Picture 1: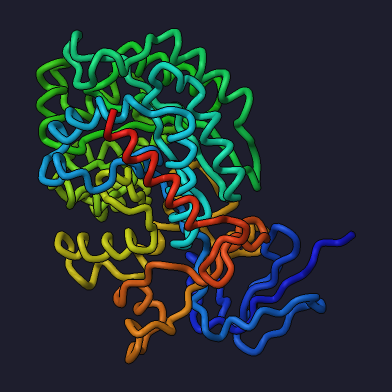
Picture 2: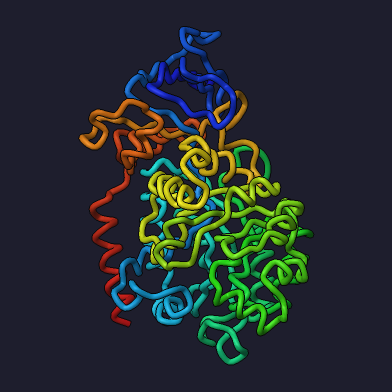
Length: 451
């Protein structure tokens, strides 16, 4: 039976993340975009379904390139609300060590549901905690992703440098190099999908310079090259991290990255705040990407990512919500708004436009994940898209629909499609009991805090 052809007709506004004109709408055949239509243009062939999008702003599905799903269980925890990164981590590590498979599944479902309702269709997660009983953490995440129907880049994180050896994490949260590498290879062989339309992909992601050994960084780079998967880590997030690298390795962060074989196009970095001009030039020349996490950087007072300088040097910029204990939301359209405002403080209003930051959240983020089948609206690409209505009180009196999406604070998509399938309809996720999920998640969060 042939796939249904759908015409999303005459959107109120459309951002394609490229130069295509889709003001007349887009035609979807199966899981792919077939046509983009200019105003007044009709589809080349009849469509079985026509969706009237005249009240909707149409975007490519947003792509989140850095998260920690498990942290939805520790949002707005009073002891760390006013802490910078290092003390924030030191207090939270023992709590996070109480994760169980059941708690992680709930945490992932909440994060993914929140992302999906914000217009996000692909999410990268960085999971680096594997306490006893949670050795199959990434398998749990795969289950959650398949339940919600998004795409995901699941990064097999790791911590191997505990307090006893000069690292930040408590000793009971670290793993041996053999365990990390063996599980990393297992996950790639079992779950990593290649080619256009992939739903689940795996990356290798030692957590940070202050929580993994130099050996695991080197070995992960070698394994990623052998298995042809991507590399991800936190880097240059805080000045404390910079001091740690200088004291332990005698190197600044980018020098350290280069010394372990990570400075290249296979790598994307979370945060990327504290770079000097020479380091920015090296990152750009190497094709290393940066995920900007504005809300987290503001919440922890870490600093402002030099996005425009990095772009001008040749680096790719994407967006991420970061963990839900340092944001404390999993909402990518709100994160895009935060990027707009935070980056204007650094570069001015004229340089940082809604179109530019939406480009980071779509096309740029897709490039960070090594994908050319998502992140834009164009013929032959995956039918991943988000539609937002501007009918709420907050939009009354607005004139530019695309600008209003960010300036007036859109926080929920009306409809979201992934691979030609509607995953959000009228702001809700079909088949998901949100009230029941919230009740179970709250109970799990309370239990985890209680010990």
